[in-house]
Amino acid sequence: MGALAALIAPSVLFGLSRSARSGMTGTMRFSSTFATASSLLVLLASCVGPPGNAPAPTRPARARPAPAPRPAPAPSPAPAPAPAPAPAPATPVASSVAWADRPLTPGNWSYSAEQRGSIARFGPPAQPLLTLRCDLASRRVILTRYGAGQGAIVIRTSYGAVSWPATAQGGAQPALVAARAASDGVLDQMAYSRGKIGVDASGIAPLVVPVWAEIARVVEDCRA
Image (cartoon, rainbow, N blue to C red; front, side, top):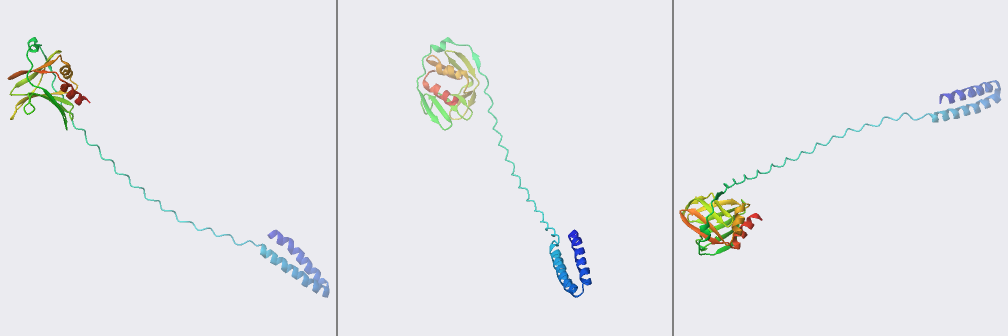
């Protein structure tokens, strides 16, 4: 804009000087020149740019959202119950040929399912002589020989004879109780013995019981 004013000013001054030397006519020319100069000045004024824009107001910084609360840690799982102790190992016993010649003990096998497993009974239902029960919770087969016996229980099959550690149980109906893992191979020998099984214990009469399907059913229930 300064360059434009520098170009216009000499022309205006030149016109004014000529008008002053020309008399009346100069007066008219002066008026005309003055009007022209005024128009140019107005034009120059209109070319002046508006004042600089004021800086835009700064926006206040956004408040950072509070961090989300961390979820509470999951509770630790309850410890698994300790496994039941393994039963004592069976002890081999010298086989007796005489037991196979004994007559069968009178009685029959019966089978029934229970809430905690299943049971096979030999003898009268109210007072059985022998039971074989599956305890699903511990996966054990529990053999009970009723009577006031003591010591171990000897199991005799066509495969041989073994001695199972037993615990004497008192009360109105005393008994000897032997608990075995469901995987014990002697249970298979009992289920597949040729025709009969011998069950002996000190202090009570020996038993010779027939091999029926009830024995295998109880064993399979505990292995399922």
